[in-house]
Length: 156
Image 1 (cartoon, rainbow, N blue to C red):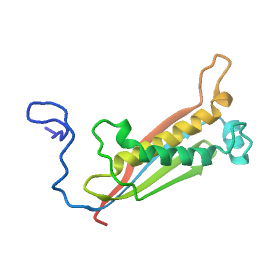
Image 2 (image 1 turned 30 degrees about the vertical axis):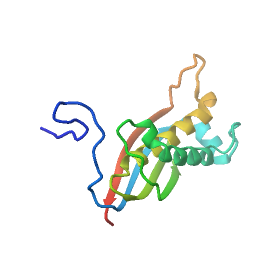
Image 3 (image 1 turned 90 degrees about the vertical axis):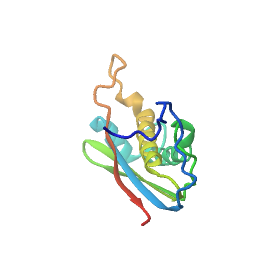
Image 4 (image 1 turned 45 degrees about the vertical axis):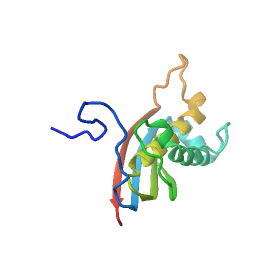
């Protein structure tokens, strides 16, 4: 049976007490993909999207999201963010985003990395949604997938 640290002995939700834990360096990388139409991917690559530079905007949005994770996820601790790196790799089918976050403190950084990559991908979707809609206002090709933690380092 797994242990859920956000539940106390009375099965009530609470924020985990990390005050006694030592401060150590922590780093996490998360990634995910967004699949888009060929024409949309081409417009992003060529910089011709009407709303502007899609990947630069997604990079800024993801960075801001990392810094606000504690305000979005109820049991996350507000932790100092030492560094954020958001990168993109574009293929013929999708754009893969990765978010690496570093801190020095008492608790993790993987939720920040997951939040950063998620918001970066959502920002891409938002910036190109007009090109992705079909005649019925649906998004048959657009799909965000494979959001995951790729690596978590502690005390490195």
